[in-house]
Length: 330
Image (cartoon, rainbow, N blue to C red; front, side, top):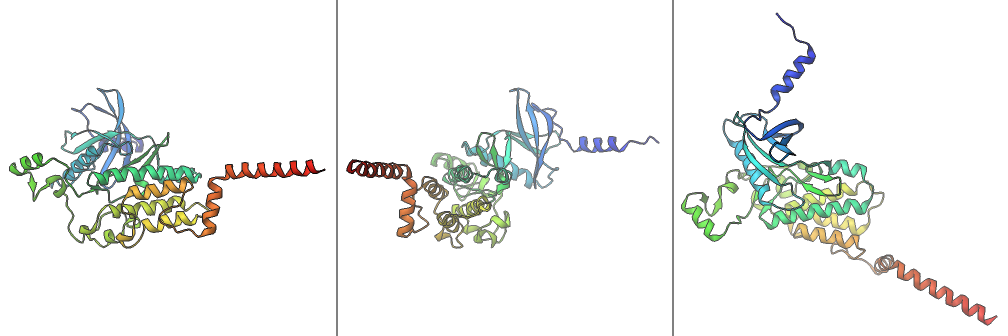
């Protein structure tokens, strides 16, 4: 009997776990990360000579449910062409039947890692704005993310923010034209006017999906029919609070923005991710925010900070005038 060294055994275990990319245009480079449903590998597109990320199911899916879910995720992302949403380049199946899709390879840090290294509050808030804008774009296209958290957001080396992992997304509106919908109905591809893409992975009432710490009350209680864009706004509020945790003193207006985004009642939250981003923009520009009512002293202090350069010039001018008057009277 031939004995193999521990090192060789470990190597064989690693190789066995790697995907077989024969028959595709991709060459394996290395394993990148592993999630709940699939594993992401760094691969090389041999035709275009570039490195991309390939996501593949962990194992064969006899029921086809996971494969359908992964295809659904790829199609959802493909519909959302936005600078802060990772684009999908390709989709297919490996020789063993496992579904995969290929997307842009993002080099950078997760938002939680970025927050550990970045101490500038304005920089953190600008990244947060970009996330809000991407989420607002998805909402405008009828897609609710449902699993927003720092681990699902990447920050690139040049300050770009990318919202990842749309596997739990809820499609609330079909964007095809009336003619397309009519054609699909005739072919039996729609059920009650909604695409199979939306219904194939529809969640039953009472099913809880997402990350508990970032779930809105209606999401935690499994009220699927109550989930809308304000559910994502709640998660964005939790993310904003996370980004502010390192601050010694959180300004009242920022705290009010968090509180409004995270309100228990949907009606009390921001109506959209865009409105949330707009309030953050106003804060960064030294303006009053919609979520906080300032008293007269706070208004004056904010005005002085906003126009401090002009105020300083006026004070210097007045000081010089006073000194000149004093000198001329001597």
